Image (cartoon, rainbow, N blue to C red; front, side, top):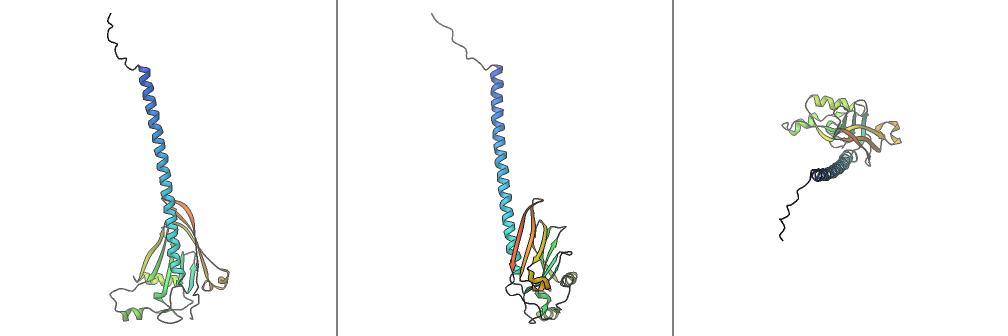
Length: 213
């Protein structure tokens, strides 16, 4: 007695719907896992970026402050800190080329450094004549701005996305910032358009001395 071959049973509608549901759940789980991994990777990347930028600010600010002879002026209203970086042409006197101004621009969220830079086309004798002495009681920020208006300055970025910046000095500076032996920068650095972390930069002035005049 022979039997007719058994037909292969197809999927029922319920089984098909169940298979599709399981596939959808598995895909959703995979997508969620990938999204979490992506968010974690982005957070790690931003965290590393903040640390690197904080380190860069720390190094760059100290590179200007630690060799400086003294702080010449601090004006929070204009966001400028002027320092006497070196003493070369006239001993004990501040010349234009020896001044550096660290500017904080709250609108642009930048911290920059500006110096006097006479045109390269000038002969050295002309540069020496233009590099005049600036009296110690001068408004050094206005002096730098006047040189900028003449086109005789050069600026470099220290940091971008700086949301706030405040300078403070050791107690010895109570008689004037030119007496300061330690300078502290307190800043808030952002990333991707939002405030991210605080940065503290402490610098000593081991060669601190006031200009003679």
